[in-house]
Image (cartoon, rainbow, N blue to C red; front, side, top):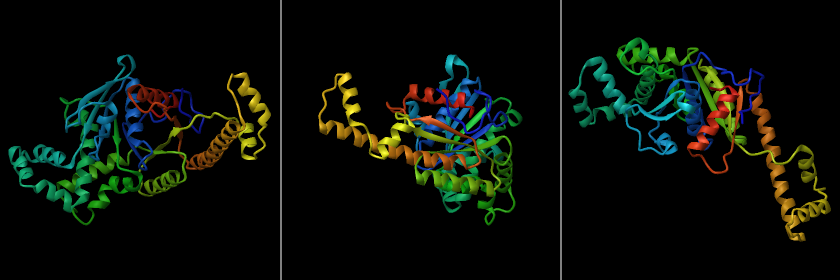
Amino acid sequence: MSAQHNESPSPGQPHFPGVQLHIVTGKGGTGKTTVAAALALALASRGKTVLLCEVEGRQGIAQLFDVPPLPYEERLIARGPAGSGDAYALAIDAESALLEYLDMYYRLGRAGKALDRFGVVEFATTIAPGVRDVLLTGKVYEAANRNRRNKGARHYDAIVMDAPPTGRIAQFLNVNNELAGLAKVGPIKSQADTVTTLLRSPRTAIHLVTVLEEMPVQETGDGIAELRGGGLPVGGVVVNMVRPQDLDADERKHLLEDDVDRGELVHRLEQAGVPTDELLVEALVEEGRHHAERRRLEDSQRELVEMLDAPSYELPRLPGGVDMAGLYELAEALAQGGLA
């Protein structure tokens, strides 16, 4: 199985070889956390050490991998096929990131934890949402630059961020703009500058997840325009939960025009040993018509996706739901399609 791509690159070759930070966003309900997890496994399958992190406090990664809730600590959660690479995971929260920041740059240690007990940390991040986003993205920046800053810590070849939804992603990543009226100088502003440099560099790609429905596709297009308007690097569009193509174009045409040969349908059912009556035949035709109409709508949305001027990939809907086996199946599709 392989992911479909709207261009013609070499099969199986990664389309973003210079990217270290993969940011995954998408409208709620499109499966962005699942795609982020599959992408992390796909990168690990290429022998990379990968950090998969979330910033929304939902513990979606822990649920997908069926592990206890993730702390503010990097934990090994999976390995690539045949032990090819390792995938670690981390749940980033602003409070823990601020305490780590204070300890790293100001050596506050226990004093920083005392601030947390007094609620100073929550107060600071509540009155200034831009500070919260700087802290969340700042932790990702720290993980991406350890080879230069902290040689004793684990180095990651790739980082995958399960980011906020499409409607908030540009604001979340435009940390400098969010701080414009709050901090014009000082350490927080300096950190925002360094984070912005990474987010707008060729080391970063922002991937958007959608399904073949009108609202998610429209939001994906709007998100791409907003990201590009903010100077942020758009990666690929992942079309998730694609239904199987059970009927060919000719069969769909007959169903939509209501000229199905019911006699032929009865004949085929009887050949398969299925007893038939008029009610069953009409029910099957009606179900087929619904499928054909859904396919027509999906095809129209697929055409819009292909007009977004970004490489696109398709992942199948997994009939049994998403478990570890399903995640590895999706990871293989992403690797074969070239997103990883």
